[in-house]
Amino acid sequence: MRVALIGSGGREHALALKIAESPGLEELFVIPGNPGIKSIAQNITIDSSNHQAVVGFCSEKKIDLVVIGPEKPLTEGLADSLRSAGFVVFGPSRNAARIEGEKSFAKQLMQKSNIPTAAFKVFLKEDYNEAITYLHATKYPVVIKADGIAAGKGVIIADTFEDAKEALKECFINCSFGSAGNKVVVEEFMTGQEASIFAITDGTDFILLPAAQDHKRIHDGDLGKNTGGMGAYAPTPFVGGEELKIVSKQIIKPTLEAMKSTGSEFVGCLYCGIMLTAQGPKVVEFNCRFGDPETQVVLPLLKGDFLQLLYSAAIGKINKQAVQISDGTSICVVIASRNYPDSSEKGIEIFGLENFPYESSHIIHAGTKEVNGKIVTDGGRVLGLVTSIEKSDLKLCKEKAYEAISKIKFDGMQYRKDISDKGILAKR
Ligand code: AMP
Ligand code: GLY
Image (tube, rainbow, N blue to C red; front, side, top):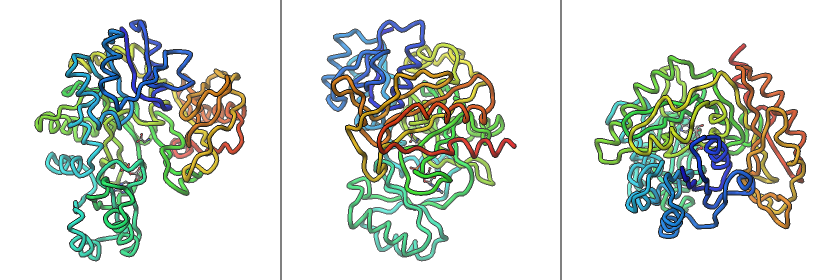
């Protein structure tokens, strides 16, 4: 099979590694890819917003399957452009990608189908006064979310009415989130452990991959600012067989049915972010793609033919036996550059990459660049150190991960020291 993968981050490096394991792979191209991917696939410099150029490349290379990694090309309708040109695509249409791109769409769909999620209300910019009246009367803390994609920054947890008013001002008056903030969703605050679950689906049928737990805050102990994700581990002990059954039956199945019935059939990876509340799992968010850094820890737990799984889903006949889930454990520690998430330091040389793979660990590139044969930092989240072991032992996996991380050095590097601790403590 000749495959084109769209994207350039850590998630795409992890996807490329797994696709490259498949016996059915003939050639893999990554658009645009990154320096870490270079040894397993061909990086192709094309702007994925240029649909005509992507379609042209896929025609020229006789591509059998296109896998779209990030949300941006999906919400821009790249899957639609490729399908119209006759290509098989793993990834939802522009309409279906609204499940991530428009939070109010996702919330209303869940409400209609009785899918467990936080209670909410939607306000438009012109409803400012009504929103203020509502916020006066509501319970605190309350969660205020910009409706559109705001680079992970559009969620504000307000402890008081004053904070909530400020958040509303950011969205409606200061327009800090651009048009993403023209509509807001005000949500009930939920408490509990969070988990990320990927459903691989052909639009009707699906399989769930092992649940992961992300670490979104910059500092240990879940303190400090929100980031794109500072690390993850899988499987998480917070999601057992019982929770997976509930997620399947009460969340994924009705969501896919609702999407199909509104003419927005969802084909690809439906990312379900859940909160394990005292009342059971509830949806925090849906994403229209694999998670980053969760993909880096979930894929090493799969045996079998991942490419076959993606292809079969993309053609509408998912082969649920294509992969099997191992008994292993995986941890990804994200290594970020100085000042992330406020800014990122670029062009700093990275040392020690030649030590990998090291025992059970390998390096994922997320924000790097090759300059004169040297690998330098090129973003906030620079690398992911992934450690995977074959047994169910999170504590051992963590020890191995942090031993391996000492082999990497660059000026200003920062990483959390407590990735997977919540899972380790839960098991005791
Ligand atoms: P989201 O972008 O929707 O995933 O939100 C980012 C983070 O905000 C989530 O991972 C949660 O930690 C938190 N969050 C979002 N919605 C809620 C909610 N209704 N209650 C509590 N925390 C929330
Ligand atoms: N790790 C969170 C996300 O991919 O959205």
